[in-house]
Length: 160
Image (tube, rainbow, N blue to C red; front, top):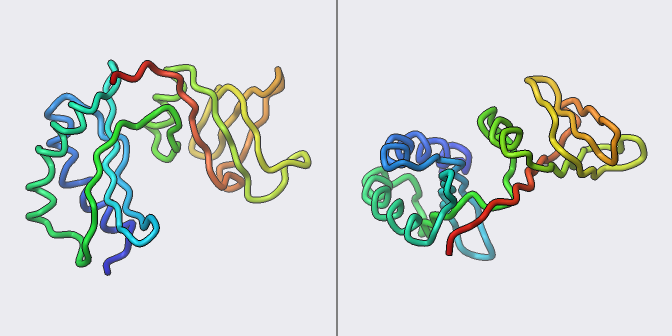
């Protein structure tokens, strides 16, 4: 099987124009194994929130393109979902979204910082080298190389 990241990036590149053309933001594409099933997950967003109808629209739009690409040798399940309230921050657009929407951030570090490996506070800035949060009135700056995972906690109204 081709590398998981390569599959996700190829699919992302192929579906991006379709998703954006339909008025959505492509948040991320991931390819992973859950129990014994491979999942190709396409996460989308829009300012008003994502409904199940939105997921159906995007699935119908991208499914033929992904079938034509045939990026996965084995059986897999295509899943289109809203980006949700908990969003991994990877790309600059992710950080911009989290800052613009006043999201909190949960930061997990590889090694202990000030005796801990997990922090949660308001995301207040980021750049190519670092991320800063405010936790209990104190600013804490992390070098990106220290961060194992950073997740934005965005409280948005989700449509049903």
